[in-house]
Length: 151
Image (cartoon, rainbow, N blue to C red; front, side, top):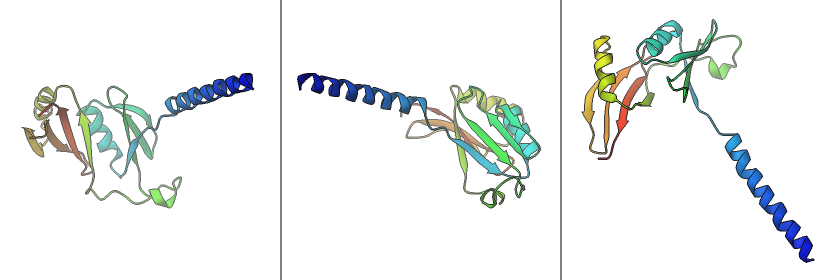
């Protein structure tokens, strides 16, 4: 009986380790998507202004990644026959924002101003610790560029 108990305990430990390993091997990844006719404008904006790279592109879909490959954003033409009806209606340019955390928000602010991009919210410090500014992408999405710091 003692041997059976030891085997049971060992099997339980193995199962627990495998469960933790599975969690680490199957992480969830978020890819925000915008349904828009402005694929070319979005590509130019995100690659030229924010330094994103192109992960994949075809005539109806564009997938971009952040400079460090830590996140992605996609753009899809509305009403495309390859897509289900849920993904047909175009984004109307309101009620969405993205936050991009950066190491040096001051330098990025100066670079974006030099490129002539309209600043929607000027560089500022918030009482809760954010130092940030905001711009708007070609689809009307607000982009908050932020450096988190202790208040």
